[in-house]
Length: 151
Image (cartoon, rainbow, N blue to C red; front, side, top):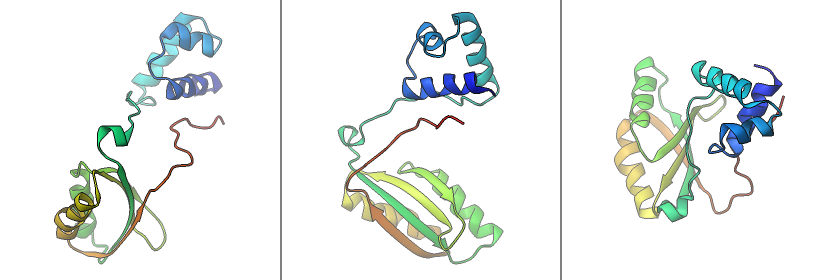
């Protein structure tokens, strides 16, 4: 991947609905080579897909929580059970494995605090082998971007 490929990716991260003509103009290429590069980025799995950026409050999910979870056991079975269960939870938008004191960091979106409590009690607690759950709620956002920096 070269700088032109990265420029194509950044342009699409800013506006995934732009036409090939607009994309080509934004990266200073003619349309045919731009489209060839775009298709190669898609075929090689560098561009995994396209999605819409949605206003979570307007959608009905005004509560975002970041949850740190520490497992009680780190056996293969406990880890696999936790990860498989979390993958099936619609409320979990992201789940990251971390180094340090916290094993997993989840980004969760729900419609309210009652739904959050229900999510913890009915979906997280039953997983088992969880030593601690540390929740933080978002009350404002300073920056939220999906545009990667140029290298």
